[in-house]
Image 1: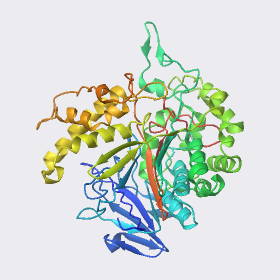
Image 2: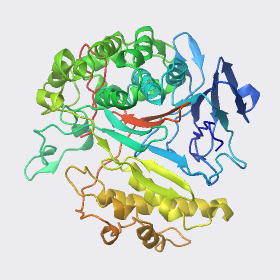
Image 3: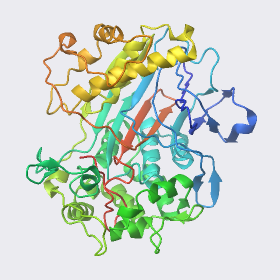
Image 4: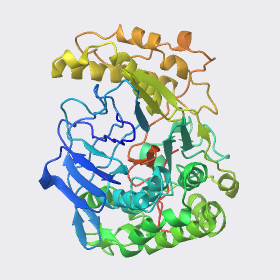
Length: 524
């Protein structure tokens, strides 16, 4: 990579049946070069906006993974009164990753998908409006962290079934010339939650998933606002009041409902209709989703953002928002004609008052000259992708046929996910054998089990403990998000942010907080 040149390659993973689009924008101080076809470009002052079908992840010569998503189908990205290009919503993203090229790696060389190169900064998200908010923040002098929070605020408006202030997430930050750090803003269990909270009957049996999900019981203590505040305080140059303005404006003035928004509402209609607050926000009076092409506004969320902008995190974790949030969890208001039973939760005010988003050490593996950083536990992304990359490093993928390369990729993924399911959990409660899972020697033992044909049935977990530098304890399975969203930003100084946040399943718990315009997660 040429010194002083910022090159951000954010290309979506190939999906065999569905190719999505990644919103990529590059802000330039002085120059711009690109291999993209002219008809695909939408140019403005110091800005390149790209909506281009991308087939695979490629960050540098060996094609290392930056983030893995299942792209959503093509649909209109939307600002009220303006139809823009489509984005992609990621599903089942295990974590958030950052790839840094070593000095010997020739980033962007060779053939492959189109590459945008600039010097002023870059942003990528699932939504044009959010990407634009990040670019505008960079153009106003903000850094990558400021831009990331600005984009996230917009996504909380336009992608309310995937993310928002009622959920949580993981942020990876590389500061210019400094170390890679992470912020763990995932939802936590209320102090009154027990291991048997989701068990009922005699003899006890776990609740069916939807009975557990659509309830106050499934709601974890939200961490998104704390994550934003922590990131800005540690690494940002702007205030919450400044970076939340784009989200406030979009919530206030609205955006155009696209097919994805409609479809995600439709799949939750039967439950949303049970909750008057949720129905009033996301359904028409006849109980159907808002029409594609209509303008959706959320003045309640605009006011909530304004409150947080004015008061900081305490505007969310204390006062009126906190009171309404806890009341919604503990006493869900359900329609007399509801078709389902909604169980109350156990969250208390103290759970909100004491929430913190801690910084944690990132995971790290070196894959063919690329340093790959990601979230450590409780996220499963860093260990799972890191282990898979360690396994794959033993194969000459570039000289293989496409079929053979995909075979080994899928088998490496199966073995790493088997370990993920067995050993990944909250490090505050389990000593996860992380160094063992990321050991090159351990990866060699897993690679030795892979043959030229697919292994039949489920793959059993391995034993990373002999390769672990700490003392581990077997962990219970930690389920990954059913739906989420991801964004990445960088700036001209060399700061980079990779941020994944979610409300868990599409539509979360189905409970919208009355008067404040956001859905609560179903993380638990």
